[in-house]
Structures are given as C-alpha cells and as structure tokens.
Length: 199
Image (tube, rainbow, N blue to C red; front, side, top):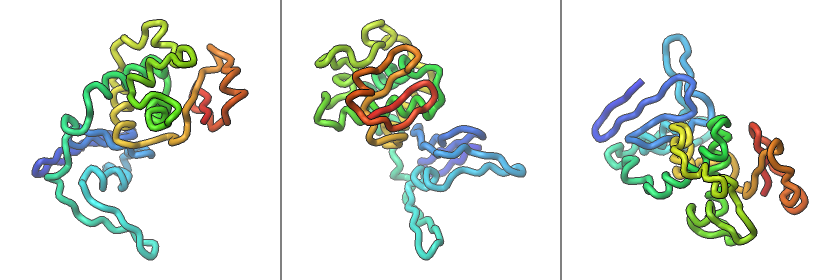
C-alpha cells in the first residue's frame, strides 16, 4: 500500500513490522495487518512517519497534523558508516534471528555507544578489545560479509531510536558459548530467539 504526497512517500506491506517513509524505517511493534480488504498500520509509527503528533486526553487519542514536507529522507538521516557497521554486526551475530532479534543485537551495540564503559562510536564498540574480543565476528571475519537486507532494515530502525531494550549491554548464544563471565557479573534481562541478553 503506497501513499504519496508532497515530498512524502509511505509504503507498508502485510505482516511487516515496519513502514517505509521517504526511505526511512519506522518500527510498528505489531505487524501490519490486512483485515477485510483493508490494511491496518499501528498508529504511533504512522504518526511519526507523517511528521505529526499523537496525544491522549480523557482516554481519546488525537492526531495533530504535521508538515510532511519536513520529514527528512533516509539519505539525510542515516549515516552511511553507522549503517555499514551496525548492519554487518547484526547480520554476522543474528543472521538467523527474527527482526526483533536482530534489533536487540543492534540495541546492544548502541547501548554500549551511550555507556561510559565502552567506546563512543559504533565502530569502536564493535572492534573494542579492551577486555578481549567483544564480538566473535571481528575475530572470525564474518563482520566483513555482506549483510542481509533485513539486517540493514534492523540497523536503520535502531538508528531511528527504536529499541527492544535500552539497558542490554551483553548477549550470547548458549549453543556456542557458556557466557560464564556475563552470567556471573551481569543481570539477566531476557531471552529472544537463540540469544540471552544481560545488562
């Protein structure tokens, strides 16, 4: 379902967890659904994509119109270097995971960027070796593989500020590592797909 307007192009597909507006990815949390021949999109990301505001008063939601001409394009918003490295670490670490699983891995990287405990750039976090290799793909070379299309979308949604967790700083896959240090020193947060996340 594409929608076009002055300086605005929005598209959404059934079962996706995002809408695309001016080359930007807006996370919908719930899937876009088709019901009775109509396509339903969660309102919050649609409002953001329309550069509008959503307010709640007395149990009623209202949308105030914005200037869609001011919605910046993906080319204006996404830093090429950030997308390049974030999508590659997501793809290398979470290639077989769901979109949410991919986003959670991207969130760990960005949470580390914001933390004083780690370097303050995506590249710096990914290649950080202060306490040994932090991400196995930097050691085995899979960080340099071309990322999947869904990993690029996950990276862009993380860069938009969407988060599965704002506090996760560590994750591991129990099938490949015991995660002994993490389990002994950090608090368990949740399990998503094959990964276990800690703060």
